Length: 406
Image 1 (tube, helix red, strand yellow):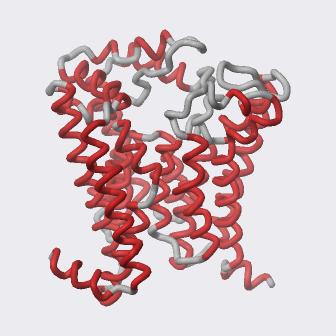
Image 2: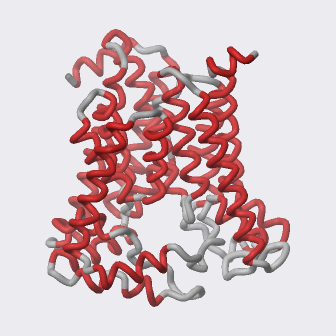
Image 3: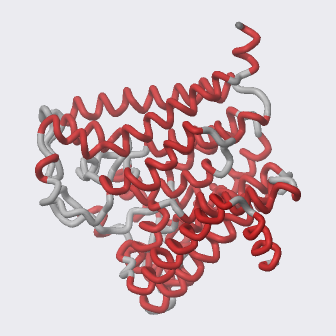
């Protein structure tokens, strides 16, 4: 099998060969080698919650989250109970060993994601397109940030790809389970349920809802409802960290622009105005996505609509950090090539992370954290919004329903 891919690489055009060498070099340096020295502080939070669940102490996993107040440290477990239950086996191990195993699994799942994605192409085209897909994956900076801090994007990417592949090929039981797992790991991916509804994939939606309910019930066995109820209530309210510069959703943009916080000072200090503008922008993004999904017909739009759904989910999420943008890989690999798409990919892969990287010192950003200049901190949001508009227009521009009206 490896020999076949090596032979395909030797036969590939020179430009693709050079990009492949660059991508593999970057993966070995930033993905594998850098992972040896990563502390995985985000994984540490999940591991602590998983260990509590594994040892029957699930009732206390949200204590730090519920005690949080703006201005204090914001590192705490705030994922739903099914996520802690999923990682419970790793909670039985000490953190260094658990993180090492998590890194190995993440890399394996990343390659699994690639393997699932290329299965939809005809055998005659699979080799060259598969190499190009590998370049797209391994040059995407948000993915390396996810690996470095111990986030679960490789797992979610695999669940998304395998789940959607299963649903599209009639394997509803397994496909629904994998997609439900992805939603419980990142709640904003719940928009995929609306995606299935608007695409009239009712059977697939039914299986996903079944598994979501079953996993919720399983999480209730690990974390009592008495501990869950205040968690869900608190999660539904503003947390006070919306303006954090790595939050590149509509929430982050509006709160940086129209409210004062420890992270940025807006033009005015009006959290109510920020909340109103955030709701208005989210409504526009959701309505635009729904309009495109309802007007599009045929499988030729499926890749664009999936990507539009993922971009919309990132834009309307309460918190969407740089590492969450790694999930866009599931969309990029489903899109037909265009120079517009390539331009947005390049911006999100190489330039946007420089603005929103978690490890940029706040003191270095102080010049841009006050007044009109803080719009610079929202550059990734503007790029995502532009990508959203590009996708929405490309779907509508090629919609048969629209063509008939013309």
